[in-house]
Length: 203
DNA sequence: TCACTGATCGTCT
DNA sequence: GACGATCAGTGAG
Image (cartoon, rainbow, N blue to C red; front, side, top):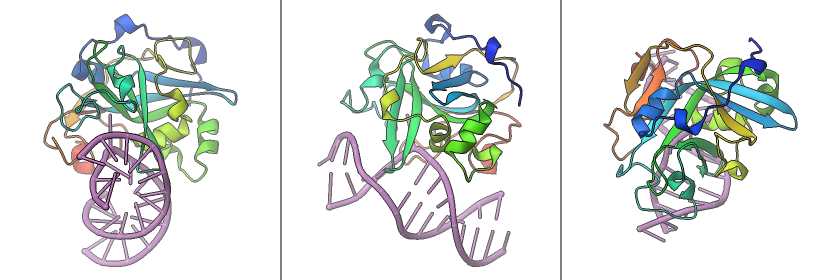
């Protein structure tokens, strides 16, 4: 693993495409950075899913509530929620304020602080540290306290610009849904070992 | 590698 | 009173 700490550059909100699908694609190759008292950990995003306005599979579909309000804030706001009573999932609010939509960060390749992430997920092989949304959140110590954080701000969780561009992006249906299960709104880096999901979705 | 199952609890019906 | 944007463990092929 390289140690590009000095080269990480915070993304400005104006750099985030103001469209959910465009953002989901844009985030492939971008970096999630987590600063904590234990140190810094970062993963390169290799898999995302888009949850659009008017999308019956999206948490925002039935309107704003106490739980999903972060999805309705400015793009670049973190939306964190608890799933199956055990795991957290990290999303990025994707549209203008008042419109509910987001991008789920599904998987990442560890690029910094792997030892820290391993300490947070002791039984996990390196490849599985952040392979899947629940694992990624655990590896980065993301929980409800980070819900609503500005990922383009100076906080403990932020987005950094890609270190190198030019990945080939594949598309598939989203994972784990019952509603709107046919829509091709999942994006992943072709050829990456750090992508989750069954093999047939990762060609 | 895939399919199946239990764990677990906040949110919304 | 269900039902999840999931995961780890198990067993079969």
